[in-house]
Length: 489
Image (cartoon, rainbow, N blue to C red; front, side, top):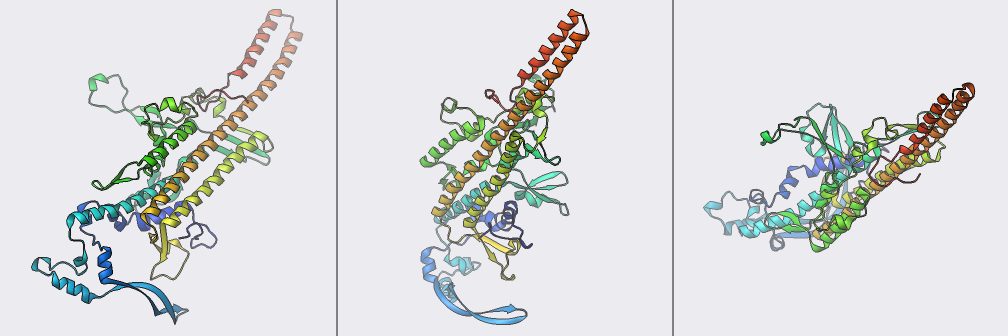
């Protein structure tokens, strides 16, 4: 497929992951054919499918390698050239004989091809569910990759998933953007070059892990008369509410129920992997080491892991706290350099990780030139289909590798984000210490002037008391990022 190397129609411009996912969704995942294949477990869709067993294929279809003359147009001149390829062909005479053998008045509307279909309805139903299993797993894998990038359309103040692009009004000016677990964190760590030799830094993590809902009237009216309906309710989020995590979780379900046509159970191997990853996620996203006591029941899920409630910290509740201010200093300040380098590293790692995800799509899909188009690197002019070499076994292997890849991406993003918060904490502490020292020196100078210039001892004591109280304020700052113990700067 080569999407990681593909170019758009504009020479030298690399196709972004969001654009490739958008094209794949449009040209294949959202097409009626793919959606129907996922629903083969339903009788309505199964009846529309003709299933050719290997025996039927061997009997009626023949495979052979042939050489033939192909003609193409070069600069308006027809050019003949020999080509060799493998083809499958069938004789309509054999089909007609089969139709004649089984012909009766009730089957006149059957096509010749349908005469080769599986006759046993139960057997065909089971086969349909088996075929659907393959396509459903592809859909789950694509969804996990899609949400790891999460391209969205923005238009007229609205946002729409690419899976719902058909709902966008015609004529709307649309912009493709990304909103995912990683870039939400990157955007809350702000670095700006304000002027030559200066760096401005700021964090905006107070709203990162909160969920805002509104109070509504319920049936127990008499029990809730004191509630102010319509007001906002702010709650903490769990890992299961992070973009991409529910889709990641589906990749652990590897047991297919042929009755329901759904993946609804984990194998023992997959369950062990899930529990192992659950522990790593818990420690990384909460900063706590009490996983064993937290999961004593052994039934916890990703959706049970609480994210750090930044919005509940004192530094986030107080709009005037040092944590919510921006800081500017020389671009030679080591702390500012480290903060900026950490953000740069997050951006570079995100781009590199998206390329890794595109390499998975290279194995999942293939791009082919349409008959009406000449060979081109422009993906918009190509057709998309599932890689013909993909088998159920290789697909499951791809699912497991991609699952680990996405896990590593999410863990790396959170670890780098926490490192960014630590660096900002150090910057705030350093600035407060410098301000305190400056304040102390200024106050001491003022104190000397007052004491020397005024013989009033009572006034002198009052000034000394104010100086002491002012200097004590410097010890009040505490990291507003989490409920962890305050780190030494």
